Amino acid sequence: MNDTTLDKMKKMNLHGMHRAFKTSIESGKMEDYTADEMVSTLIESESDDRRNRGIVRQLNNAKFRYKASLEELNYGTDRNLDKNQIMRFGDCTFIGKHENILITGSTGIGKSYIASAIGHQACSLNHKVMYHNTAKLMGKLKIAKGEGSYVREIAKIERQSLLILDDFGLQPFDQQSRSILMEIIEDRHGKASTIITSQVPVNKWYDIIGEQTVADAIMDRIIHQAHRLEIKGESMRKKDARIAA
Image (cartoon, rainbow, N blue to C red; front, top):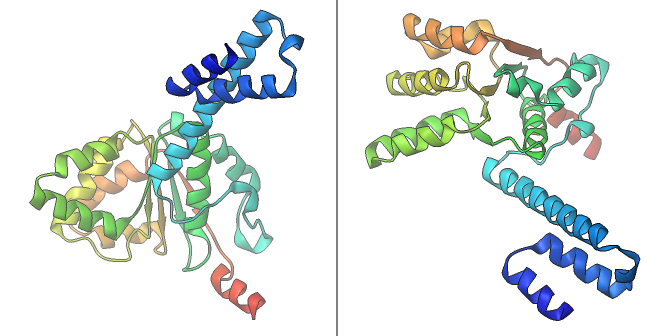
């Protein structure tokens, strides 16, 4: 009977239940459980398994640049990082409040890693997250317009609880990119959160976006209810290379 039950669990994709039930049989602890305890154990195991598989799926869909965690961040005093602030970002209440995070600093200083670490944490809390290099996303969406898949791609972005736009401002925005950025930011304003990383100070973003009226509209929506991280210090890539040498 137990073999039949295990087989049915596997066919029904009840992987957590299957593992817990099989473990109980193999360990000889079946008799230690009351019927209620066994049901509770099986349900709890299935719930944990589905949650873990959901997190893995979210992480795969996000396509992060780095496998990063908040615990591994360098909080050296020269970096201008407030650990308490970062840990507050880790509880992801900013997502529930539809707030943005703007991370600026020189190249190699760890902006993308911090954004990815917050994104990983958001995935672990069952938020939908999407990571993109800004210039590559603009290029992808321009191609999508030509291929007729633009509306579907924009809708996918809009559904994300957290969008990470990395390396913002490395290339100036042309008219088409400006229009796409405006649509993305407008769709998310007051509805979802965005993390933006950039080597360029926030007050210079107007010039990068171009066309003052559109830049004003975009920046007003980005800056509204935004947290700012201005990271300082030495390039982490240069520092790591020196240590390795």
